[in-house]
Amino acid sequence: MVSVKDAINILASIHEDTTVPKNVRSKIEISITSLQDTNGKSTAIKIDQVIQQLDELSDDPNLEPHTRTQIWNAVSTLESRS
Image (cartoon, rainbow, N blue to C red; front, side, top):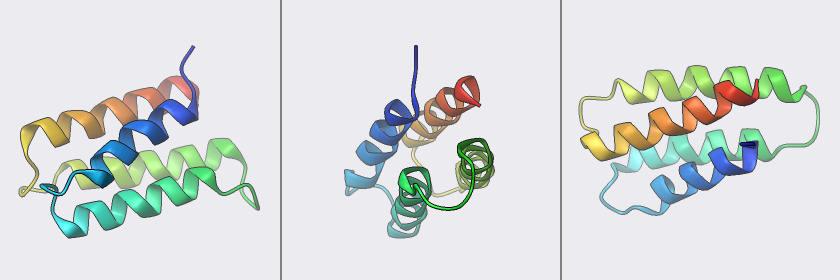
């Protein structure tokens, strides 16, 4: 069974990759923070919002193919959780 932590781990590995553009790493960091936030919104709403952010991010033309694939893997993990 996959979990939100699995998606966070995928996103963290993207965030730590120095070859990923800074603007992408910044948005990834925001997504991670959103998923880890325990206050306010329900988990399902947070997951939906992060999926939307990551979908938009995966369209970035400056992304390397392997980074795009990692983002899609994180989205897939989150979709199976929501």
